[in-house]
Length: 192
Image (tube, rainbow, N blue to C red; front, side, top):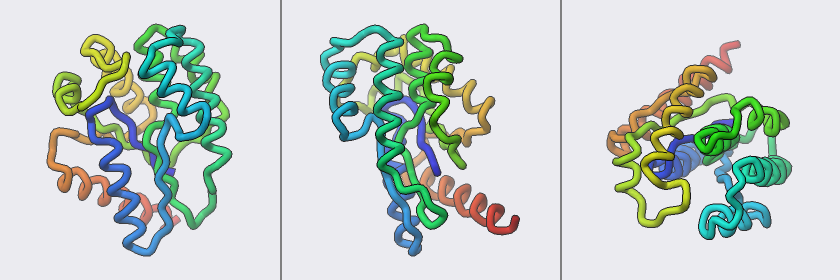
């Protein structure tokens, strides 16, 4: 299980999709999925939390994302021959809802059902540059919030051993670095 995290505009979706394609081109089975999902709860989140801002209670938002995550995990095939690539996971809840003042230990408790990924890539970028890359914005995409989100992400990276990737590099350079880390990690796992 490989997870891509980062603020919007960091290139995480681009890199997650590239990695899935590259692994599939090598004859491996790689599956790409994202959160919020395309399911009923994920669509509700995108509409009522992100777009319209109708649901603003940060604790309620944590619970909605956890519900979407639970249904997401139930739809994913976990087996030794499938590499699951997630575009966002519970670290996003920690970073974004944590930036809005929800205690991080509460967010982690609510998401305690979620498995620990094998690899996490944090696409790191200055929030000002990340915002410049966006075509559309939701209620979390403002400089003040994203500065806090990035700070939480960088703390999570230290705590959980995430690979912090400089998202200002070229798409190809980033992709090659990520692929190198994945191949090295797979070689180590095979050698055990």
